[in-house]
Image (cartoon, rainbow, N blue to C red; front, side, top):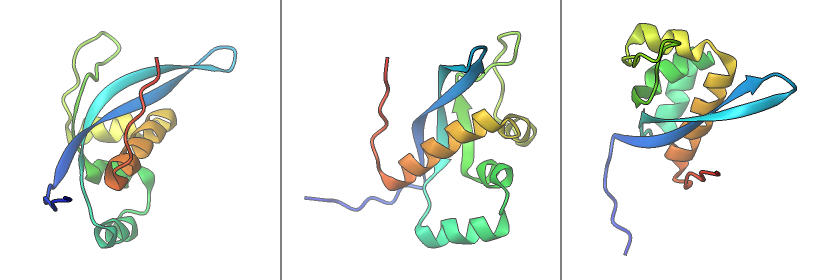
Length: 111
């Protein structure tokens, strides 16, 4: 039996493909807490925040396993979200994870 449980957020794996020399990428994995939204909520948010960076700043509420270049953990603050999501390949990984989380598609982790 399917039981409808209303959750407002979920922790979900994110894979960021970091560009490398020679046209390759290196996957980096982390966890992010995303808001779970209904389709009308997503539509409204897309109208209010039409830019990718603004949208992600609204739907990502926390993260784990994110560090600065010195290896120090980065706290998920509004400023840090803005800085991180301005990086295109980071944004792509978070967007893919958000849509998977909100559609209920299982996250596939490849080794």
